[in-house]
Image 1 (cartoon, one colour):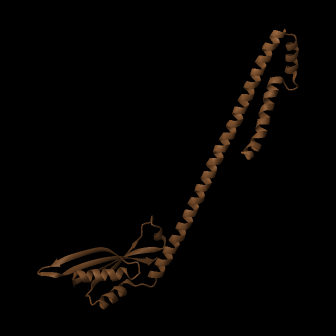
Image 2: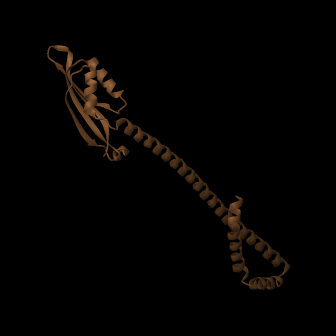
Image 3: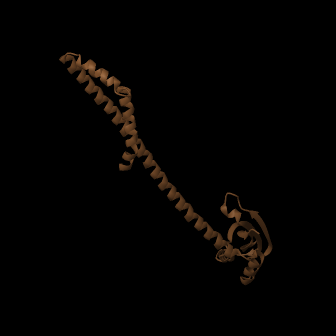
Length: 215
């Protein structure tokens, strides 16, 4: 409030000076004329003029004060809005910084987990370890949607394979081991086809989604 008062005092002084010049004239000529006319009036007329003059002065001062405090209030509101906007900007900037750090950490983690990973040898080794017959493995590289910030660094890879005869528990075990491998490979699609006369084994096609760094 003190800072605003210092800012507005020159404005108030200039405003009152302009009022004085308009009312009294540059060198108080109008005041001299009024005083001469005033002393020529009768006592009753003088009292009436004084009453009107006092009322006019009070009115003018009231208007000046209303304008003054109106300006003060307006500046206070602008200052309050500016402070609120600045605080909000700081919050947004802090949030953006934290999100950028989290995203950078995610990119670094994915890069570390997928660097040098070849999908076909990975699945062939896992199938051999679990003694599961795997056929027709294929890979398809797909660009990530440009709206996804990961698109600047990675491509998605669809890895599809078929298991001619496999039981449901072994399917689940294979999928679990793949997703626990920490290579950011996730099951995308599964298709299970029953075999005639066999209720324990199924012809199963699995599609996994992985990431591959852009070269």
